[in-house]
Image (tube, rainbow over all chains, first blue to last red):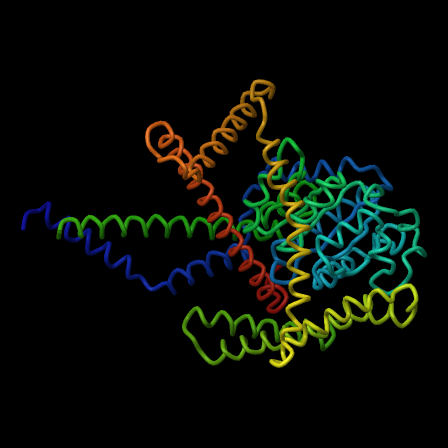
Length: 287
Length: 212
């Protein structure tokens, strides 16, 4: 066997061995790649992207005392990705002295909203600059009804009290009484329904946060028509928002782990492709 | 001091997480147990939640407190009962009517909304003049947007064979589609890692107290 043939033979064997690697090794690498940076943070720099800056600017453009609508359209399965964005936006709204009307199109959104309220309760005065109106069924139809008469959909808050008794709700009629709506969304009903009804039909500016999986589907709505004003897509974007607000939270803490995990995935993709190429090369030779 | 129930909840959450993760090594009784518990608890939770947060406030409360103003709610109530008839084979035909009504209404509402949001407004958003953008970077992005939209649409135009000029444009469309699939895959990988980070923050922080 010539020297060239020997080197090709050993390379194709390596390719075969690599392609047979037990996937559990990959799981272990990912686990370590995520755990170690959480325990020993490296402090990688976080760059703010234009879409997140648009969301920040929209909240910033509201005047003190303006009323904003936050819709919690997700459940605990998406909590790690969306909750940090919701927390950061509520903190931003508190800093700007905005009035927060919180609702949920997903049943579990109510308890996730309450978690944030309990954390921030020192700066939130219930009924004055914050109210939790709870969950409403109906999705798109419910949003349409809110556009006609908001109180018809939410006559009572999550505790069962008449919303007319609270300062924050006293003169609310429809979407015209809100500066914008932010949907924290991980599916249907969620951000798409808000864009379709509140944005495109009633002209209320729509923004918010989605899971990273859904993000590519929402990017086309950020356009000249301003169907969607910015987007906090996934944990990385939530970390960017935390940076803008100036209060690092769980998203920022997870960014080192996210970067290292991505690096590991990239390395394995390269290894996988090299193995595929070597195997293909060998098959061709054998043929 | 953290109360007993909070600590218990954290321990149950941690052990359930580890049981589910154990499937990554191989299928085992811990995984099966956690999976069955999850399915059972979810079903029970949704059942109770729907009764207390949907049926009682939206139907029963309104009918009991002010029947005269809300008697029309008897119709959706009746439709709901008809839908439940699906569980009795003899009367399952009754369930077809509320389902037909739901599908018809949803399709009618969605058609108008999707047409406005996903067709008309999206087309208008593509009708842009890059020469008026004011900056070279924005203009370049807008040109990419126009070329990507048109070539992507040409790829899905099947009434003309993809050869010659049409074939070239369709091939350009494939490149844009591949880039969008790659971006979607990247976002998906990012989302899964984010969920893992969330669970590890819970295990290392809330459970073991190792995170600052």
